[in-house]
Length: 356
Image 1 (cartoon, rainbow, N blue to C red):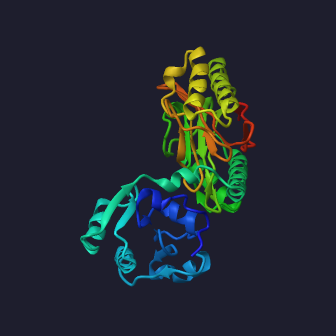
Image 2: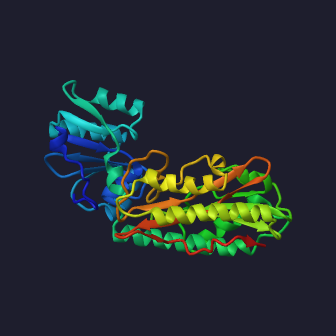
Image 3: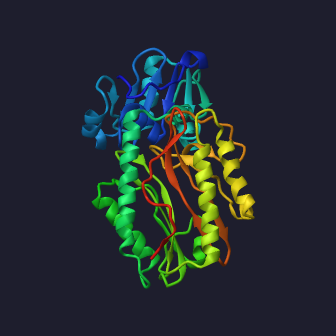
């Protein structure tokens, strides 16, 4: 079986006979399988072996390149163990962040006592940070759908509509525009609730003269987008405009700092430095951004002290925010791609403070 992407895992260097890939997104990345239950056994000698259950027999035949597909009638892990024993592998690595302790125990019990199971970090995640042209095209399409859904959602904003109603309308528009699903539960918060960075929509109704924060993302062809915009229902007072400009200045500075060779932590420091100049840095309590792709949150994390060096092809968010209890919060977020000379902002939506 040929892999959609080379795994980048050197089994010889790791002194392993095989590696079991169990993370759903990692299996999809390597094999092309989009179902919810699949595993991939990479072997030092022999072709990779793909495993799934009978529900996905037809789908696996359509998505996974032919050669070695195994459809166990029982539990997947039983089929995996049988193939490991058949191949006489003795040293087997597994993704420690994707194999539960219970599944590890089952595999250990099923294998020969001479087999050695070695926990590994998520080695595929490192490779997934760098997107190829096909992946970037999917992210671009996802970003455009997301922004179009936002524009349509704006037409529904009025005093009296609830946060939940507005979130539902936005997600409805995502689907209508071709998204597979939201990349996460759409965040809509109004008034003082905008100070909650991960507020969940409630039945609270929008009223005049208050902030509205909308954080939304879509999946298109398996790839995510992410965007946050902060609006004001009615004419924003001077204090809100000043705070908004400070956040916008920090976000633009963060974008300007994104380029190959710069560490993720450096981008975060730049953003915090601008907010500190405005006396607002203590109100910023999350990282400046994160990678995205097959998952809405991937490596790298653009946070304090992160030493990951940015490379061309990485897709990341830049999303500083200021959150003041009782007053409200402001966050501005774009999806950007690291290029050979800097970065490209994919999000087309205006960052001017929209007053409705």
